[in-house]
Length: 158
Image 1 (spheres, helix red, strand yellow):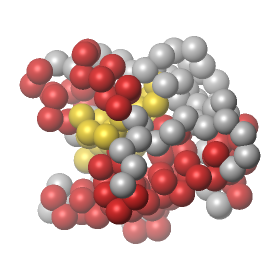
Image 2: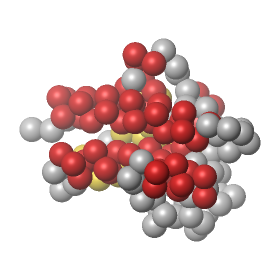
Image 3: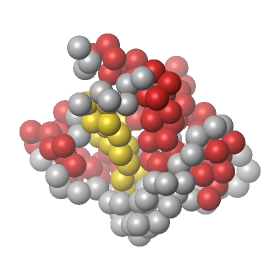
């Protein structure tokens, strides 16, 4: 089983959306028995709570239900368990790098590295924004999730 962890700040906007989008891709490709996913936050403010209602609504409008997810923070054993730990932005990447055991450092990546065509390094936090921020974030996540799956299929699955 190849395991992927998506990480943002509070695990209520970007990372649960990424997990939901990626899970949807896995289901459509019949890969849920070969690739496992989870999401977490660098902080624990929202631990145990559902994704932000705006994230849920945006995902639902695109045919994806993320309402069952519950926020949690990154745990020390995540670095050993997950094959890839994907930071939604460079701040998350720095936070994760600071606590990641040296032997696991090669598991950390920026999520948007899997969507080089966007020329955007970070998934912006839509939490405090207005307008179509959640939809724009969803589109970015979809692009990176597609690239991520292609990379995993090419480089990590037999």
